[in-house]
Length: 214
Image (cartoon, rainbow, N blue to C red):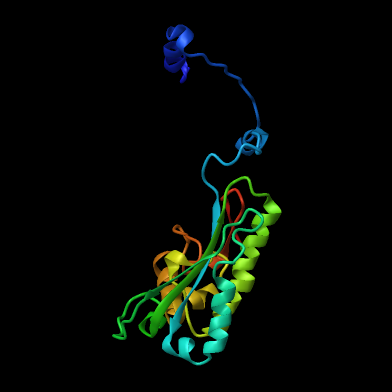
């Protein structure tokens, strides 16, 4: 019924246009999606994996040879994209603001001079195993290197790894316990929830989006 006006328009076009329709029943949307051919390229969309770190002046100057090695690993490869995953991008933003402010922002921002990010992307034709490998590399190789050169650094929430270990410290720093106390006081039943926010560790989000209390 929803397509009736469009079909009527096409039919009226006579030999100028033609159409063919097929109706498919499936119990879930993902089964319909998986039935589509995947060898025609990607019509759009895909995924990406990012990790980042706020770097202080000490992190940039204490061991420059180690830093150079880390940047080499994080940055683009000479050979270009590999296995359907893009060449890693590497970018840095200069930032400096040493004046302390009493808000929720991670205090490590006050000592950071560079916000460094690296990311890779892929289209939706990439197989699951390759996607998992790319995500693992972001978190446990590239992210680990950034944490190594800046162990006391944090991350910028909007350009962070969703799998960041010890995210309470990385995202919120010394503010976390205070934020958790505020959360527990004003929302004791966790009516409001978001990933990697204060108190979110009390819940687990299933693949279908369902929240389960731990």
